[in-house]
Length: 77
Image (tube, rainbow, N blue to C red; front, side):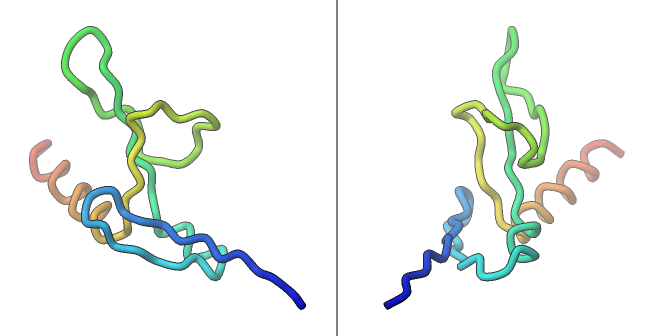
């Protein structure tokens, strides 16, 4: 009998759950990393590239990443 494990990602913002059955499904997800550096919490990066992300890292689904991107660029203009 064979046994497979299918990872399930949960968005830390909207609580959406998605099974990651293909490698391309994982690329839609992002990791928001922020930390406090001599003041308020600051956005550091949006990626999953850090091998040891701080405890403040949050997993975000594609829809939440898209909303964050729109909000960020709206405030920058």
